[in-house]
Amino acid sequence: MEPTGLAAAGLLGGLNYSTMLGRCLSVGDEFALPFSILKITFFLGWFYLCLYSVKRSDASGLISNTYRSYFNLAALAIGPLALIVLFIADTIRRLSEGDLDIRDVPRYVMDSIVGHRKPKRRVVHNAPAIELMDTTGRVFADVYSRQIRSRSHEYETQIRTEKMTLDAIQSRASDILIDPKGDSHYAVRFRVDGFLREYDVLPAQKAQPIINSLKAISGMDIAEKRRPQDGAFMARLPEGQVYFRMASSGVLGGEKLAIRILDQTKGPMKPSEIGFSPEQIKLLKQIVEQPSGMVLVCGPTGSGKTTTLYGLLQTVDFAQRNVITIEDPIEHVIANLSQIEINTRAGVTFASALRSVLRQDPDVICIGEIRDSETAQIALQAAQTGHLVMATMHSSSNMAAIVRLMDLGVRPLLIASALKVIISQRLIRRLCPYCKGPATLSQSQVEYCERSHLDAKLLLEAHGCGHCAGTGYYGRTALMDVMYMDDALRQMLCNQTISAGELKEKGDQQFYATLRKIGMQKVIEGQTCLKEIKRVTSQL
Ligand SMILES: [Zn+2]
Image (cartoon, rainbow, N blue to C red; front, side, top):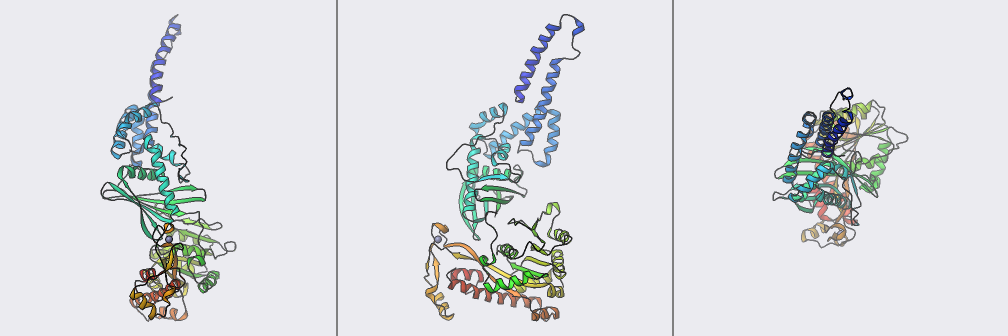
C-alpha cells in the first residue's frame, strides 16, 4: 500500500481497533493494555514515511550525488516534511526544464500520491529496432522513469532517443554531437567518414528531455548541467551490441554532449582492408613474427591509427603468444587476449598499466597511445628487452615521430636499438560506388595530369546519391608510409649528425611526397578523386 494511504488507513484503522478493543476489554481494568495502539500505529506510519522519503530522494534527479547522503539523513529525521519539500521543488524544476507540462501537473500530483506506475511500452509497429540500456543492462524505461516522471513525454523521448542512436549507427557515424545553437535550438550532428553532417535541429524543449535521458542512462547526474561529466551506455541490436562513451559539459547557451560510438557488431579490419599494399603486409608480418622490437603507428587525431593497430594485432598468433593490450577506450573486444581499459579516476594510466603488464610475462604488448615521457621510456625499454611492442603516437610523419620520442626524453641510442618500423598514415574518403563516374577536370587538373603523364580519362568523381547522403563518398581507406629502421638511419640517430628541426622538416617533405605517390595510385584505380589527395597532402 502507498504511504499516504497507509498512514490514513493506519490511523483510522488504529482508532477503530483501539475503540473496539477498549470496549471488549472494559470488563475489568486488569485487562487494559500497557501501550496505546493509536500511538504505535502513528509511530509506525511516520517511520514508514521517513523511509519512503529516503527512497524518493534516491530517485529524484534534483539532489546531486554529492549531497544525497546528507539529504537521506535529513529525510530520516524529518520524514514527510522532507518529502513535501522535495516534491514541490521537483515539480518546479520539471516545469522550468520542460520535462513537465503545466497541464500535466494535476496528473503528476495524483501519480505521486497514488503511486509510481511503471510505464508500459506501447506496441508501435514503427518503433526503432534498438534497445538502449545502461552498462549494467537495465533497460532505458527503467533507468529513465526513475528520474523523469512526466508520463506524457516519456515514451516520445524514448522513441526519439532510440531513433537518433539507430540512425547514427546505420549511417556509419563514429560520433554524435548535440550542441546548443544559441537560439533556443539544439543541433544534432553525426560524424561520418571524418566529416560532420547535420542530422536534426530540435527546439530546446524537445532536445532537453533527450539530453536528460542520455545522461540518466549513462549514469550521469542529470541535475548537474555545468560541470563536465562522462559516462557510458550500450544498445542491443539484432546484429549485436554497440557501446557508447559520452561526455557532457556546460557551454554558453546550454549543455553539449559528445557521444563516441564503439560498434562491436563489426569486427576489426584486416590489414588488406585498411589500405596496406601486399608488399607492406609482407614486411609487417615479418616484423610481427619477431620476438622483440617496437612498431609505431603515427598520425594526427582521427587518422585511423587505432584501426591499423587492431589490423596488426590480427596478424599475431594469440595461441602461441601472451598478448596484452592497454586501450582508451577498448574499441573492439577480441577473444583470446587480455585487454585493459584506461581509467584515470581509478588510477589506471598508460604508464601504471604498462608497469603492471610487464610483471605478467607478456610476449606482445599493445599500447593505445604513447602520450607521456614515462610511457615512452617503459615501452621502448620493454621493446629492447624481449617484448614485441605495438603502439600509436601523435605525430605528423615518420621522422617527426623520432623527434617526438626524443622530446619525450628517450635517448637516441634506445630509439635506434628498439624501434623497428614506423607507419605514418592519413585517411582519404572512397568514392561512392553507386554514383561515381568520369570526372570533369579543371584546367589546372588537366595540366597536372599532362605533367605527371596521367590519362585524364581514368579519373573518376562522384556526384552524390541516396547511399552516400549526397556527399559522393562512402567509407575510407588509408594512405600509409611504412619506414623500416635501417642501418643508415640508426647511424644517423646515434651520431646525431642532423638537428631535430632539420630531421622533422625533411621527414615531412618526404612523407607528403610518398603520400601523393600512393594517393595517385588510388586515384588511377578509381578508389578516390584528386580533390581528396589534395585535401590530405595540402598540395597539388
Ligand atoms: Zn553515392
